[in-house]
Image (cartoon, rainbow, N blue to C red):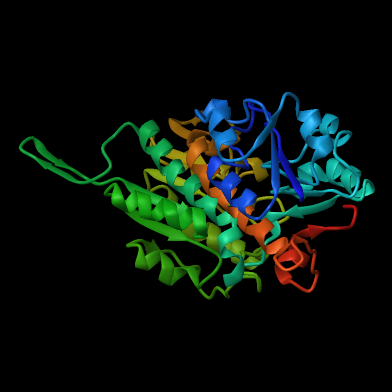
Amino acid sequence: MKIIGSVKEDLDTEKRISVTPETIKKFTDLNFSVLLEKNYAGHLGITDEEYKNNGANLYSSAKEVLEKSEIILRVNCPSNNEINSIKDKSILIGQFDHLPNKEIINKLIKKSVKIFSLNLLPRITRAQSMDVLSSQANLAGYRAVIESVEEFGKAVPMMMTAAGTITPAKILVIGAGVAGLQAIATAKRLGAIVSATDVRTVAKEQVESLGGKFLAVEGAENLETSGGYAKEAGGDFKKKQAELLKNSVKRNDIIICTALIPGKKAPRIISEEMVKSMKSGSIIYDLAVNHGGNSAFSQADKVNVINGVKVMGAKNILNKLALTASNLYAKNLFSFVNNLYDKEKKDIYINQEDEIISKTLIIKEL
């Protein structure tokens, strides 16, 4: 019987969890033993009793859980203190960004820990149930619009009243990946006039299917990797995109920035000049703020006011939807573990001929 464990994250920065009572039942049905730190999800209103009733074993300290576990499920990278308690040759599964976590990942590799980062999942049909980027980005795109509209402080849809007509707000979404598409859908549901842009020309059809207007860079090629992600644009494209946005940005009331390039700093798309060209009272919400930001003046967990324009970005926007995000994330993790599990041998089998396994396994020091 394999032992799966999970401990509390640092609640100052991360409120999501990796295991829910629902997934405990699924793991025990596969004959896994599940260990959790006591009061694992009390901050989300989930009691230890619910976990026990579904078959979990609870321990008083994180150290005990980590020392006993053969498979460890996380949201973020373990801390330096936790590394000492993790068993050599164990398996660690979560979403680990290479750049900020390089030192910790290298230490774990020296302990022969097999690290699986679900941020690296290939975008193939078989991996959809494990796709943490999609499940979490979907919620982030929704929440970014809600936060922006609240800060905007004005009605979003068109309203006809005896006193006059309220014109609908104009919302521009930069980046039409999962987060961007959900932002478009949410803004449309609220009654806004929505436009969007993306370096991937294939995004045009998706944007338009949601009722948004696609702003295309003239003569642009499709800047998409074989894995379906955006890739870095060249200098000529950036100049044309800047010219396109220069005219569009100042006409919009709210801008949602979602553009990311896997493994690289976020592209700077909204310049200082563009921010200053916007109407006073406008909002920029930068979902890429932790990766360098798409917009000038964006800082994590700060609202910077530039000529009356509010530039915002959260260090972890999903903390505001932690329970919903956790339910989806825990299901993603279970699906990934289930893919590692050989039902005939009733054991974990790391088959590196499986694209899902080979692409997510970090085996070399960074």
